[in-house]
Amino acid sequence: MPLPPPTSGGRRLLAVGGMAVLLVGLLVGGVLIWGSRQIDPGGDPGDPVEELVIPTGSSTDAIGTLLAEEGIISNARLFRWYVGWQDAGPWNAGTYIDFRLDSSFDDAIEVLDAGPVPTAAQVVRVTEGNRVSDALIQISEQLPHLGVEQLQEALDSGQVTSRYKPPEAASWEGLLFPDTYQFDEDVPAPFVLQTMADKMDNVLDSLDYDKAEVLQGRTAYELVTIASLIEKETGQPPEERGMISRVISNRLDSGETLGIDATILYGLGRSSGELTRSDLETETPYNSRLVTGLPPTPISLVSEASLAAAIDPTPGDWRFYVLTSNDPPSHFFTDSYNEFLAARDDARERGVF
Image (cartoon, rainbow, N blue to C red):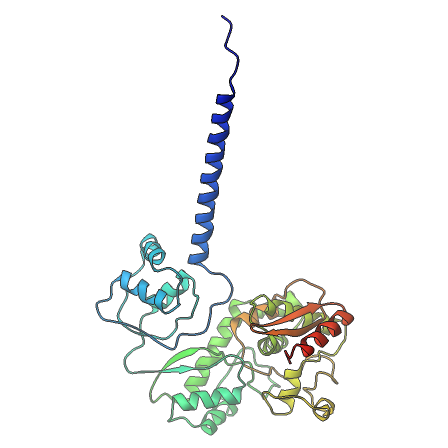
């Protein structure tokens, strides 16, 4: 029996059906991508949240709404679903001090699981990028029974130890971990400082600093020093830490001076301000325009993000960077000195610095 000739209607139906499947696939893919970004925004967490009080009787729904309102998570409804899927909670009411803005759901759940601050505990916050001397002032302001001199004496006495502090190093710069801590109100100075040193040791262990020479050909202390330079130099984009780390490594490997103004300021006993020609010509071990290699010690307390960048720099051949924006703070990177000069001059003309 002869078959009827094919019609264009069938082909159109197949085409429409294929298009519908494609659109559904794109829609599902888009939803999955959106959801994953809500669950984990990526990049470094934001600034610490000073404190968050969860009222008595708060349900999981109420806690999710509170976290979203404070900017800790991005989506309360999706958080409630994620909590149920993970079988997390319930959580206790009270004051929480370890939350950060723009956290992943897992990070927020980890803080909630740790529980609120005990009623009698004193919260102490120490900020990354500060020098040890500034950190001691911060601690003293939050624990008034401990004076700055008392804290410094505890560091100098040998009562505080670190597995990563070289025997010849007198300075504790860079070896106390900046974080939020809880202490009893009458805590002794050595206990506070040893807690910070132990936290630093543990973070370094987790980043394989005990294998530093195998991984990077530099000692752990040298990498902590590099991390302190990254901490002072980085802009807001999280990827800059790894790029600055690579610039420092490239310049060290080529025998060039680092030319990092933050080290010069440290050697002059200053934390900020314009550098004069006289400043740049002042001979100190920290003048990285005159002295090749790393400064003799770290120049600040360092975050985990900078430590991670120091031991695992981003691949690249950059040797120069210059600040090109203040809002947000960000840099231009290049391996060309002429491109660096052009970007620097342009930034000056625009009043960036």
